[in-house]
Length: 146
Image (cartoon, rainbow, N blue to C red; front, side, top):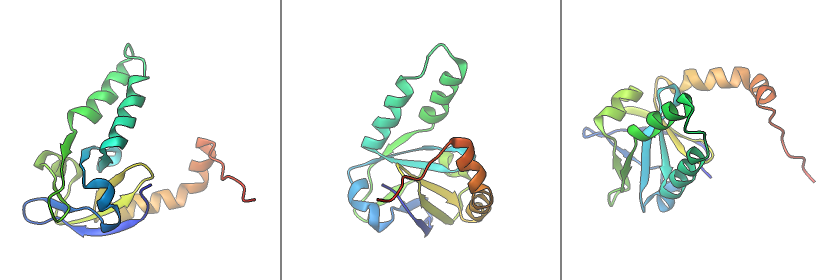
């Protein structure tokens, strides 16, 4: 499970260090793709397979299904981290997410998200201000402690 918030810097070539806590699970390889709200999603290979499995269950005759598949898959690239556990984010993905040198990597349960460092605080603040309404709308329930 991916958790937390990490400030990182892209090097001059556009390489991103995977947070050290997640290097063992990401070292075999990751898939990076466009995310919602103009961030990037990083999935482990197994996580990507699970996502694609979910896409396979959507009705292919629906235009929004096809559009979602196009959005996620056309921008996806599989990457193997180098010896220092860096991944080279392709220019088209960096451009999509508006990434410059400073980025924030956040854990988002089954994947990591990469945000422009100046955008993440805005998104985080919006989510924090609306957390109760979001939980109510999604019908989320905290499990009870026993």
